[in-house]
Image (tube, rainbow, N blue to C red; front, side, top):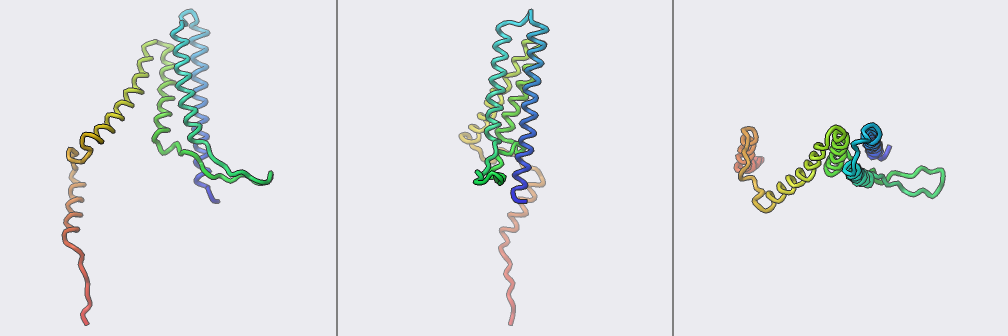
Length: 180
């Protein structure tokens, strides 16, 4: 029963990666069938370039996720032994960088499928660097321009809790002594 949690993480990661892979394949097939086969007369070099860009976004994001979530197993000396799970890999349900990479894949799916209708949907890709700039600006602002809590507004509940803790700390400890 050891490593049960790690085995569940491996299983969940595999299901999520399979879902992403199927989503990527489906969107590429739909794009190629509709844009290249049905609407072939309006297919230009710009569409080829778009296909290359979306393919690169898929490839880089998926490859990074796959390398992050790859589990590590021990090497078995005998053929009968099952290898033991040493590391489950990155848990995709915790968020962080994996969440951002998944968002890149989802945005790419949207852009690719919506660009069948109109080329103006390519402007949706601006969201990715804009969000990255927003995150970097927030990081730099907090680091260089006073990341303290001077400007934060404190709500009533947290203010009362803080005052109570300050009052308790200022009282000092009560020491019980026995009289003999």
